[in-house]
Length: 114
Image (cartoon, rainbow, N blue to C red):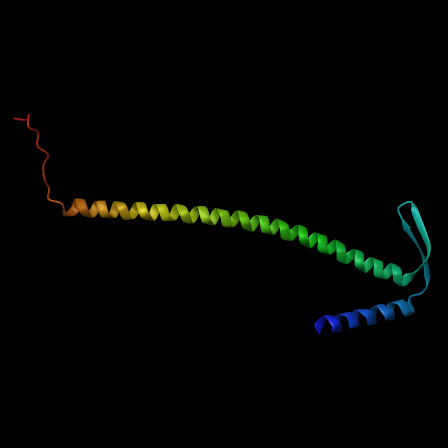
């Protein structure tokens, strides 16, 4: 329903622009010249060209952002794995430390000593 309303509004705008802008104009595109083109064709063409160019620029920006986010996600995943490994190592060292604290203190003996 929303799309139908949108098409009706756009159609109304196009009808208004085409009704009051019938003046023939000459359009120069590089070395080419197009004469007797109604002004509303130039207006609509300009709007459509602007929309297409803005969409292309948006897509380039969206793709660049996607690559940046993917790189950041990869970095975060790598750092999380490193944190996990370091946490495991700290836990192992804490367990070893507790074993050394609570183990009976035994002097190493040398059988060959006097």
